[in-house]
Image (cartoon, rainbow, N blue to C red; front, top):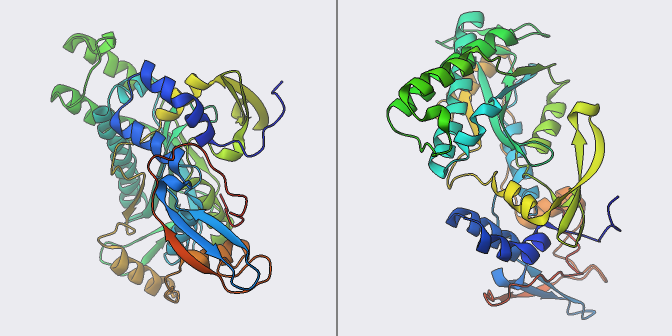
Length: 403
């Protein structure tokens, strides 16, 4: 049983307490150190902020800047809302399917061996899955499909589990843009055939990377110690059934957006799943997929939890959300116009840029430009960063925190 639940336990609290000792006893890359520091400093005086006060009633509060690191569990709410609004402008009046392409766990050690491997092999995951879907779109539908892919690297207990979620419009636009080709409303592509093609494309490219010396092979990876062992290991991968999962189409655009909001900007573990920390252990909630998705509680040594979290720190500038087919950035505007013309659908109204205050009002109904006590207008002044202030400091008046 977990100890008594602590109020508002955050990942930053765990890092503040245990990360320093962890970094002294483990190899931590500069990128991982930056993530740890960003999470610790997020919304503290270390990043600066501003003081707001009400001239009418004298109420005042201190609000500190966010780190905006994509691995920080507190910095994803506004990024998600903004991203979803942009995606809503791209929706077509057709069903949307959801496919998941998963790498076998035999590849985990090789992927995690170095940042170079992580970048190369996760890029390869995107490429192999995208080429597979584009090939099936041309061969089965006779046109160009459009889809968005989102990378996830974890399971519910923060272990390595590399897979991409693919959200695919049910249909394709002809190569010359002359007509829209509808897919079956309940079926897109056969998953067994997708799995075989995906596996073949990935293994072929993986062999090219290994033969070209473009991967770091750790000394303990005996399966790749010689060309003969390497060929045997690749043959085993080619005989293994790779998991490609297809879900039923979404019941309308709103369901699609609800799904996107849950998955696109998710981090390995969110603060609401953290339950308690005591005597060097951390308790957290998770869902057991093997037991009917039941919600359960488990604990890990803080050192292990930090180690597992850092498994999912992506290389700098690595894009974990990508668009392909007629949604690819270079052709999106032209292709979406062709799709809407063939579907006889009107283009959505352009959206106006929103400020942080606009987003907070839309998401929570709170007007952060007004005093929460008397409703009067607030005045503010900037507060410079205080780099020496690294301890955790919460602000009771930070009432609009939506994370």
